[in-house]
Image (tube, rainbow, N blue to C red; front, side, top):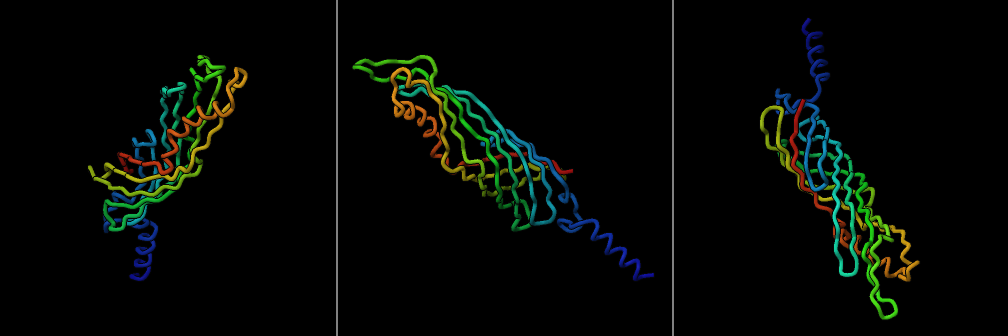
Length: 218
């Protein structure tokens, strides 16, 4: 009788899955984590399956409009952040500190128009008020991520998570359409104005990620 009982106990323990911190199963759960970050507002879902590893997937988004006033033109633009991905976290000390790596898919972009463009023609300065040039600046679609984080427990099921890391966004691409050549502007003049929008985000080839989230286990 003892042998079947022992076998049944081992089988039940295996079926229950790995535990964390001995008999404490509080962290061996799925979780949701609403968050705010430099990628926008977002939501993540994940699972921590043992003392050292957890995985999470999420999506973030944000949009805003602004006008960049340049010396020779105005660039009314809309910034759209939309990205999602998967992150794997490693807890080297089986505690609250973790190292992270992952990949995100990005639809981040800036769309805008070139207005009030000035140029010298025939010795005179000409200003075109109507938007004749549309442009779109996009980041790379695939962006690897590396970072670190710390989880501050609030109670058995809730913790406050802090993440600090970086995405490699690469060199942004630029596309544009223009009718300004019909009024005597050269293609170089048009491209120069559109390039100013890309130049404003070009330094962010490595995009910083700072995130605060509320992790809720269930």
